[in-house]
Figure 1 (cartoon, rainbow, N blue to C red):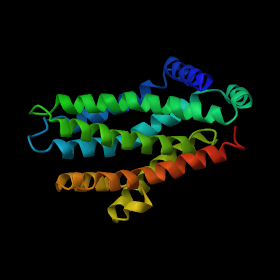
Figure 2: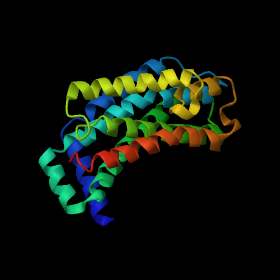
Figure 3: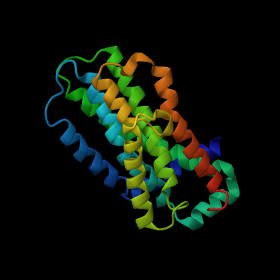
Figure 4: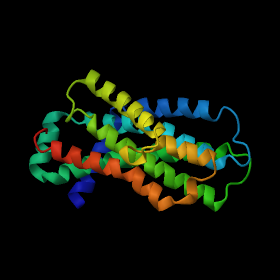
Length: 223
């Protein structure tokens, strides 16, 4: 476990040093500037949280892909031969850690634009939804990273169309067929988001879990 954490820290440091981390950060700041151009009115705190978490997914996927792409293929191959499956775990751990930082920035920006002091329920809902968003972004970013899709153009298109497909399937109401990001926003604006949190969590984590399992499986032959 120590070696996994050490490699994850090394990857995060390399990601920051390469300045690739600035690209999704700037995209996030631009998104937040649009979302919170005006203050969030009283009574719309949960709806604004859901909007933030849903719209954050492609930015988080971009960040995860960027971190997993930063490491040279030769260096990744050396780590893979030394650590085996743990190398893949360290990459995902490093990517998820970077996504948590971006999600925390988004949550802080949201809280700063509320017109009333947030309740404990609003705070917990924000953390919960942004964690679900980070899980979705991690899976989408991993499946479009260089070890899986060698072409940068194909990778970018797959990330964009993957998120659009997520939105389209969410609009159909087929919650089990995708991460129901549109369902988050629709339910929040109708005041029923918290009607059944365990069910919504299961629906939101199913496909990220399948996606991450597919990433680990595909990495067996794609170092």
